[in-house]
Image (cartoon, rainbow, N blue to C red; front, side):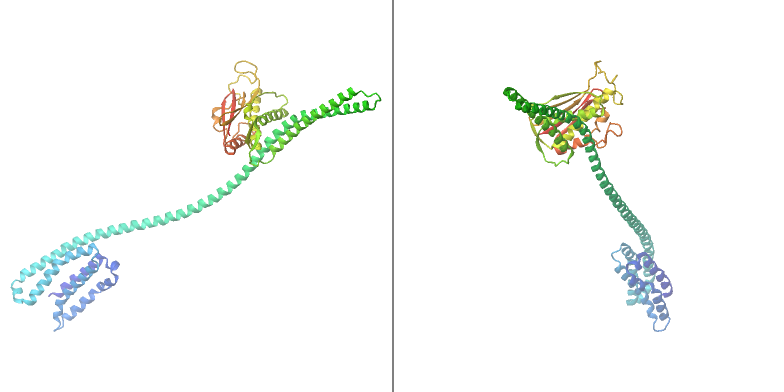
Length: 463
């Protein structure tokens, strides 16, 4: 055997196999053996030159084939190894067959040497051709794997980047959440302050009405008490007379009794007004109580009117009530329902006052504030009606004031929204009234209005 050419071919072939099958990656320990095949080749070449060891040259080929078979076996799960096996199998089979025939029938082998060598050459050509094909396929697969690995690395890098962004965004969102929670807490505190300010504002308006309203019963008390003093003195003078006039004494006693009854009546009236003011001023307990709803509405209407007159003594308005006697006592939270009625009635008087003055931007299509569209003199009027149905108590607060534009009606119950000039409204009155009626009493509060003609607020309370 020509050992030198075989060695010259085998070493690059083994190197190609290592590279193609990526043995350093899949079988690193075996790859170390393959990387030293050139040392084995040198040993075989040296021994083949020594007399008595020349037979060793014939063992180099089977050794190389054995190494290749072991490599293929170790990587049998890989497609590239199976392709390599198909490339080497014909050549190995022919090579081993020729060596076997040459060993057992040397004369026969020598007689047909050309045929055996031709078969071996064909196997070598098959090895070279299929080996090139296998190498090309393996290179394609390796490039595809490298591409996939690169895509995987890019995906991992993108994933790491996204995770970093998620951590940053989460941190940012947590910071924003803390900021919003702090802002929300501040807003709640501010809302409590504003609600308190709204209550104090309504209390201020109520106080002005109370001061005017309470003056009447106090005047009666003062007048009748002075008259009673005069009657008592007259009675005392009459008793001292020797000829007592019993009839006059009886008349004086009767007048005194009547005066005391009137003093008692108007004193109770003043006391009820003060009690109502205190109920309105104090914090609501949230407990419902049976109250005369008609009386409550009537009292707050008069107090609201006198409160407005205390601010503008030139203002006058007609107050109309149409109370259904069947309403009777209704279970409500007195302080809260009082605030609702006071707010709606105040708004009604404000609307008619604005129309009367005819100097606001809300007069709309009115030709003049003191003339109706029909040409009759304008009379500011606020009307309260109550009605009991099968399942509801209906309260209506109606005015013939400036009305509410359609664009405003959708916002009328929103917190902090107001059509009043700056300093005349907090924008919380109707919002609080809506919450009290809907959430506190399970009812509804609706508005019906036409710009330039008037407004009706409708409260519906279940019972």
